[in-house]
Image (cartoon, rainbow, N blue to C red):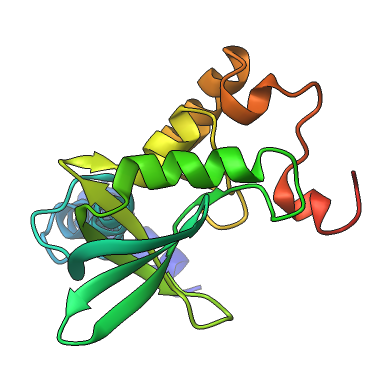
Length: 199
């Protein structure tokens, strides 16, 4: 009602209605100005996503854990001795290797041992799982061991944990196409299905 009255008044005094354009331009200026500001919400969200991606995928300059690999439990779990009696059990983020009673269990474990046993590694911690294991990405000589395990066909890309990890996704695709490692079996069953009895 007020807008109609103002429009009539403006038309009667100036011969045109221009207030709508003025208001629109003012709002557009404020919105576009906010979007380009460094503290805009979308910029903060984008930065947070980028930081998270770097933690999971890129080679970091600092590690949360550093030490020597003193034990390889299976194809996706190892122990890092940090010194002064501190030893941390690490589950490799975003990958899943064959279970103990599953075909290629020994192959995956031995492959991981060949890569890292006795080596000094760096670990970026991503999470802690329900068993209180530290979940992280293990690096050796600038390479992600998590990614190397999938790339060589020794483990699956664990979609449930790392659904947006495109390097792991592509590494699994290439390994399966080339029939590397566990993909040499006629019908490899992912561990999450194996545990549910889908064998």
